[in-house]
Image (tube, rainbow, N blue to C red; front, side):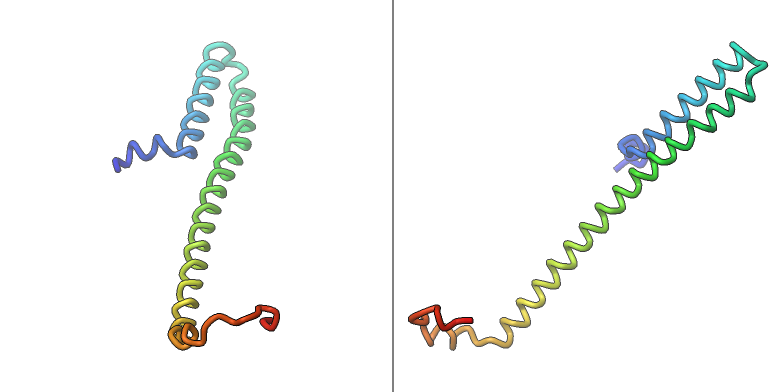
Length: 109
């Protein structure tokens, strides 16, 4: 996959890009409309960075949680498969089939 195309599919990158565009529009607009208030405008932009940073962090945490869950499920599935292989190796299936079905399941614990 093209790395540039991959960037534009990333939610984190799109949020970062949107934040940059909005910050630049506010800064340039404030620079032309009220140059004497530029320090206050820069303060507003700095305040807006915190929620955007938290959104990017939340997306990253969600993506990481999905990866951890997938890895855990794969591990559990492999562990169960290896346990089944171990049991099949120690139990003689043909011997159990030769014994037949029990007459009653009441005696089974």
